[in-house]
Length: 164
Ligand code: SME
Image (tube, rainbow, N blue to C red; front, top):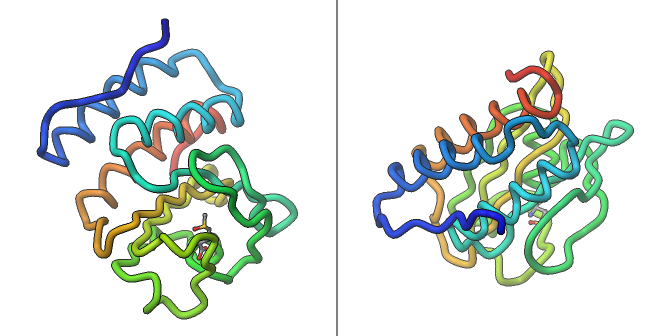
């Protein structure tokens, strides 16, 4: 039976620390991009209960929908468009407390209220982005940014052979 990534602590930083430790141990030895990202989306949603968790993969200079957990989402996002396309263009994490105030936000679902997008950077190049949507305002802060960037660094190491 596969592990369950469920935690009782209400402290967000502690939850991230436990998750990253457990999850990195779980993926040790696995390097397939789709396989690792698919289980990452599932494990993150299990641990944190967010509304939508998934990855967009860089394909031909734009983003194509990758493994995710949640409602049906848009297939393609052009570089510089929306929160995900901005993370690709700038290679910087985007924390959006209110999606309605982000110019050009792409509404895949009307239930999304706040969002964080973290680029996966290997050899100086963005290879994918982690996109997490919440159905509540202002869900994500610097703690989320910090630990999700740490997690994405580990993912890059595992699947692309290098982190940022
Ligand atoms: N809101 C994102 C689009 C992807 S969906 O949230 C899954 C954006 O503005 O890039």
